[in-house]
Image 1 (cartoon, rainbow, N blue to C red):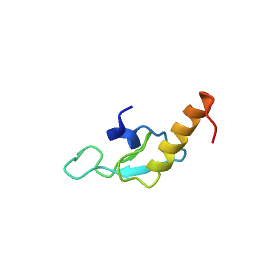
Image 2 (image 1 turned 60 degrees about the horizontal axis):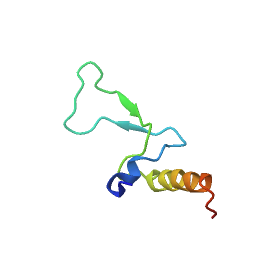
Image 3 (image 1 turned 60 degrees about the vertical axis):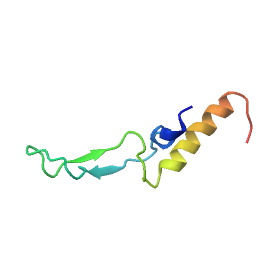
Length: 65
């Protein structure tokens, strides 16, 4: 398990949209926003998304809460 990228592996349960990052500019779509498929560092939902993913996996392997 790669704990350095743990929070990048949790799928999001709700739609989260972000603006383009600083330093990136798309002249064809300057006001475009992006919908995240998975969590990012610093995102409020990231820890919960990972917890839910890990819990689901462990329960499927007969662990209990």
